[in-house]
Structure formats: structure tokens, C-alpha cells
Image (tube, rainbow, N blue to C red):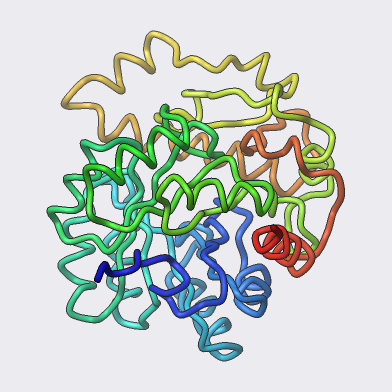
Length: 321
């Protein structure tokens, strides 16, 4: 008798195998609580909170409202000076799972496993999936070439099928989900669930500027480009006039700094800090320097709706024949 695959809903005891993805500057406690109230899980980036007190307050705010499972995204790269203090806080206060990005999850897994905190690791290929499997990760977030933010280079189907054939960890597919049929498709390829971000950017609960939400509705898939100017890694953004002016490729000096063994860590810190500041200014205020992160799924966003409406449409379509 074969054991049924461990899907995300079974893993977390939720109603649907859907994770509302952690989105830098966008995810907030209102969005998390609304997602949890409607049968799915959600996560937010630890970096959305400037201080340890604010991070603790956000987690406490969610926990006082619900006991449903939620997670926190942790940038585990050495260039993130807040990584270790944030990990210590998450281990102390407790969350259901941590999503690791842009670095080795070894320390996170070693600390979280004894505490019962699951660790899901962002991966973009089989090679790294095998690494995190060996370290004891609980699942992989398979970031494909349809994802928003730091996207991968492999199509959703190819990445899921390759991981499924060669890796024993549950696969949460990230990128390219706008409708319930996309979830069913990913599950048919072997995914245990999906991580969905872009279609939630223009939700009522998001505290971003009206201009950002309007851009999500006005622009389409053809307007999404990858930029290496903002974080040291390829980041998908809307191709606004300012992005066109800025350019999307690292210049020679940036390239040299990013590839110099001695300077790489510090260069990434500086580039990431400058990029985060540019994205932050555009996210919360009207400015001609518009740097708005999004994925190709903006093609399917045509109105500002509540989290409940978006989740309910996804789940209704997911169950449709």
C-alpha cells in the first residue's frame, strides 16, 4: 500500500495547499490574518520590520488573533546583518515555519528542528535542492522563472518534475499561479502546494501606495523585466520609464565588486541596501523613481480586492471540475 504524498495542507493542517508568499515591503499582519482566516497559510519577510521589537509585535499580533500556522521569510545570506538576531527571535517566540532565502539554511535547520519549527528552503535548481535535503529541510520552495522578486531560470513544469524525480522533499511551487487551475496543474506535475505572491500585491489590506497598486493593474506580463541593479541578484520589476532610464544590467564596477572574493560580501550589502531603499520609496510614496517589484502574474490583476475575495476565488477555482 503506497503512502499518499505529503501535501502542504496536510503538512500544516490547513484547508488548501496554498501559501501566500512573503513579499518585501508588502506583506503585513492584516494580510497574514486574512489569509489564515480563509483556509490558507501565509508568511512575511522578517526584513519588513526594522527593529526586533517590531518583529516581535507583528508575530504577537497574529498569534493573539489565531492559532493557524504562519511563517517568516529569513534572508540567511552573510550580507544580511540582521539574519542571526532575527533567527534567535524566531526561535524564541516560535512560528510554524521559516522560509530561508539567498544562503545556506544549515544553521536555521539546526536551531529550528529541535523546536519543532519547520524549515522550507528556496531553491532554483536540483543541485541546491539536494543540498538542503541533505541538511534536513522539511520542504523546498521551487522558485521558477515565472516568480516575482528573485526568480529562477527554469519553467514551473520542468523544475517540479526534475525535483520530484530526484528529491524526496515536498515541493512548494513558486511562480506563475494566478488561478485555481494553475494550482491543479502544479499539483499534477508533482508539487505538494503552491506559493502565490503577485496577485495579492494590489489587495485592500496592503499598505503600499495607490500608484503601486494602480501599476499592478495597468501593466502586464510583457512589462516585467529582470534587474541586477537593485539587490546583487536578478530581481523582477515593472519596466517603468525610470527602470528603463536606470537600466537593468549591473555596470562594470558593480560586476567587478560582485565577483571579487574579498569585496563581494560588502558590495552585496551596499547594493542591496541601496536597492531596498529605492524599492521602499516607490512602494510607499509617489515618485518618478518608480521601482515596483512584481511577477508576470500581474497580467491577471484587474481590480483591487480584499484578501478574502482573492483567496476564495483561488480556492473555488481549485475545486472546480
